[in-house]
Image (cartoon, rainbow over all chains, first blue to last red; front, side):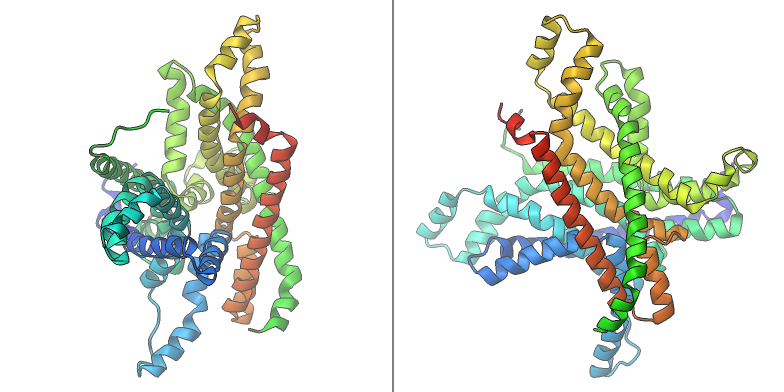
Length: 231
Length: 229
């Protein structure tokens, strides 16, 4: 085995940075979609509940890879039409944007369930107390419900983030230069497939370990003042 | 939406869906067989028994399936010993490579499910079996495993559905399962929206049917009767 990686070290490092950017951007999109989905599912309006159900069922029933492909190849016509409307006929979705949309969509569909569980864990009495104190609905949500939901939802979201981190590899299929694709490029040039895919595996394992540590820190912080329940 | 086109390629997509089911079916059954000893070893009190299954599970749960697939399909060819070995006719066939990668991947996840299920078997039941004079082997075989099977079944059904979706990755090593078939048809027709939509419907239907099958299985094994402790 050759330890200077045949000069592909910097490319793999750049790929790692791209993977991290992709995972974090998708996380933000996914968290927002998940929160919206959970709010829709617990809303008093039937249309919104139906929409939330449809979102989580449809997206979770179709493979992530299919979403990546569908969003990248399937929206070419629509995006071009949109581009012509705003006067930019060459408008197209970059692999990064398509990846963020697809992974965010999938993350959001699972996060919907996590957030819904967390929403339901907050006693109704607290909302009523908020109303009785004269807080507006918006303030009840942002200052009373949301901070407490975070603590309950964190372990579930952490699991989802681990899955998201590994799903970023799928975006290599549409040509984004993240770790997996950089490894493939290195393989084509060096004819050392096992070596480079193993290096990529080590990179993913390192990322997983780091996100586990980060999650542990977040959970500890969020649980300040709470005894951990022992089953 | 061009419905005629979807209708025209429906039989080809069904063919792909069949291969998808075949891959998933074999992977989750063989994966379960591999996972049982792994899961049992993970509950061992001795660190040296735990070490091997722990590293196996850590590797397969910590890296993407796509990577594992490429390691098997492209990676193994780097070694002359493999290329000249007796297994080479299998290891260069994408079908076998996909099966190997998927089986190893899912067995790591199932092993963790089994470990959780075994540890959830109430200690009192194990002690009762031992007190009745059952040997350790008998206790595992007649009490722990049947009990753990029922505790772990809902999680196992989740894993099967996750594998159904993960099997779409086999298309990246040229296998014509559902996603691969869809991509081939799109390369010919340039109709990505219609064909991916139809493939998505196939996945939804398969997921739905699997959920119902597991619901029946849970009823048959009386899973709900055993939950109240």
